[in-house]
Length: 305
Image (tube, rainbow, N blue to C red):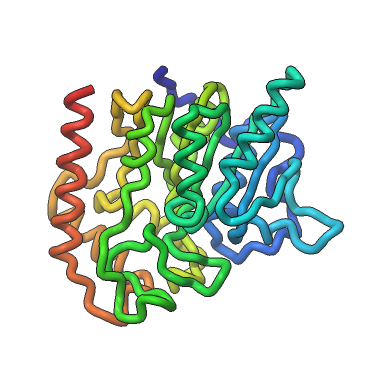
């Protein structure tokens, strides 16, 4: 179940005529979620889709009733229930003999924390749906509180001195469910991202996509630098971009900087461009050790594939 990256995948004439994210939405400038929705729109093309979105920035995107900035049918679910609601949509589509692709689209709060039970249950049952987590590493829509996706050292409204624990390994958790496909995506690598979404849309069973989603408000960064921040996270090794097939075969798509000095430089630049890391001194050595441990585990998985 491999896929090939195709030239000219982004911005082709086959792109969806009705964008998933219409003009007039309520999203902030530089929002990584907006970038993710635009990439999703390019990948979906003319496929019929339905979406389930829980309480998160994504569900305030449409604006005020009776208008909607979404170019597809969307069901607003409770914070914990997007995977359960998407399961219902998927079952109904199957019973009606429809080819509709059902997508749950949720932030890290509704994925890592509040929605983890229904997410795990749907994955364990191998429900036929695509679950996309746009991870801005905070509860961005309710005041900027810490989530279990918040990285070590980041300040939030509930961790004013910096978070003391490492970020939860959501990809490892989902791969452990032995689902057909799990992948991490980069908004800074459009062709890779669109190819993975298209591949996931063509599969059946439960699929999980994880997107690092810059949030200028929560990250206290410049709106124009979001894509560069994601690229720095990848170059430093902080955000691995890889795929896991059936919980067994692991492929790394984008490598970090080959030299330790290059990775350190990228990591320091990543921290330096975000105000959420400036109120306290981030222990870069500790973060580096965590990154090295993570990559050692990931390379063992690749070797064992």
